[in-house]
Image 1 (cartoon, rainbow, N blue to C red):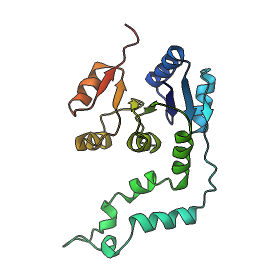
Image 2 (image 1 turned 180 degrees about the vertical axis):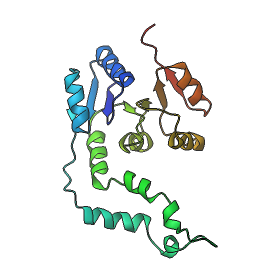
Image 3 (image 1 turned 60 degrees about the vertical axis):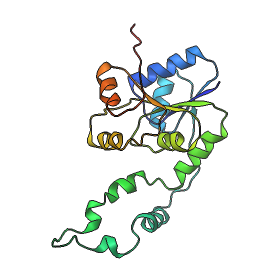
Length: 194
């Protein structure tokens, strides 16, 4: 069984998992998607393949595609009844825009799907849609690893929906395990010190 480890962000726990997987199984494949993560993995002597989409970025084309998807119709141009608050101000267009990666995410997804792997380990990273896309659409088990805090509004909202696409989430302490298990999420506590 080949394990793919896709790195868009790192944490001490994630690095320990990567090293553990590489030592446990020679069929482990590590890929990264940013220059910063690649440099850090290189500094830690962790071999990885740097995946960089070959997409020429055109802001005007990207913005036009975003407008077509998220800003169609007159409903966003209206004020809420009896207010001067435009609907567009509360629809979190900035968050949609942040997650709207246009063609580069699709190309990264295609690159990873072209590799031979059976399961994946990815960061639980709200700043990249790649891990979420792999978990939702690859049809393979994808486990996430804690790379940041879970006790914030975005994670609380996501966990409350029950729409977490990962097979489970690796955490490094009892506190996170208890917190996440309150939402019915499959958790695996990794205690490397025992």
